Length: 532
Image (cartoon, rainbow, N blue to C red):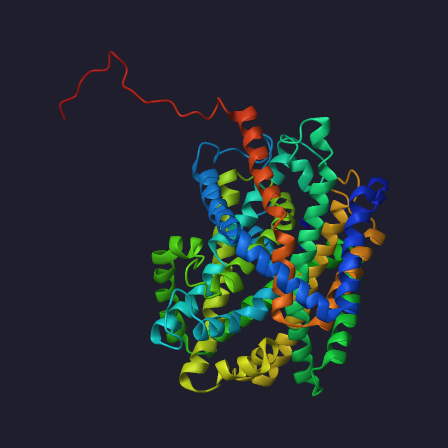
């Protein structure tokens, strides 16, 4: 996460050191209990996670797709409706950050290691198990496979991030509330003593959801980094290697969190965004450029033509499993991260209007993710179709991490690209999780202003708690367990997003309700009639 949550004069001030035990204690105990269960009873943990995931997806799949679709519609209404021109700041406040740095900060915070893991292999999964009854490995399956990942990382995910960002920015810069908490942005709804008692519950749910989302990043990222390290150093990629990678990575992002936003997190964030864009351009121009561009243009049309159908497709009759395994998993992942992204995006958006914030989050975020998936996914599909690398076979036999390494090895300057990708994966993993640890510490701190940082002990506690969850996921193993963790922890956050939307509307109606009503325009009674 970039340096913009900080100021040159911020430090561990006394209020930043005051831990909110009503939030900190139950959240940390739940995380430790989950880590112990995963590590000590891996088989039972895997069975429990699968059973819980099956229950949630079978009983509440409709709620996840309605949440995603509703968030997208509500975000568009915020942008183009009566409150779109409301400024997130005071009359004299200018835009705090220029457009390109602002977009780069959001993209860097919002993607993380997950995009590096999935960009190559997600279309390959869809090629073998396509959605909507499309025949596997057919020409149509290639087109749908290339497009569907962009749908899963595009408009709806970034709309889910935009929804909490607006009330957070409104809370900070219009209402002048000095607290970096989601519960504080729900204040118009929690407006009685009885309702205010729910604030610690909301913050605890946010922490648990964020742990679930971060756990998914860990479950995907650590094996990928380990595979690249093994390839680079010529050592076997086994559980011992993964624990070694995790230990080194914990020291890296623990040091980053300890140093804070200005000297730690911002440096890593600046490195990863520049390196990622350079790699993307290299793949595009060194690979099958025309094929990638043609397939990308085709995917854009295919997505726009089928966007509504995909957004609400649950396959209720055939129950082939595609929505549960993919769309519901992704929507849950985004919901888990939405409060964290809302806190960050809202914090860096002072001086912009609601319309600018919403369209900027959805537009820039979708453009960056879809470009990544279009280029990397197109490259992987070309390897499979041309016979240069049996990607489908490798993915089925070796798993995600080894397949990504094989794909990168096929690039021009393959040895160099392995080294570059190893470094990129380390940095992406660190920036994803140090941001999560920082936000976790902020939420569990009393009276933390925007120019303050939570105590270092608090930050490091959450850094090592995340590492403990990673150990449990490595012991259990399996993509299904990782997906289960996300879906289970995301479900309680759906009501929190609804509370944020209602709270924002109450604030807007109280402050601007009469001022933004559009009058009916009519000609004055004495206006001369014109024949032309």
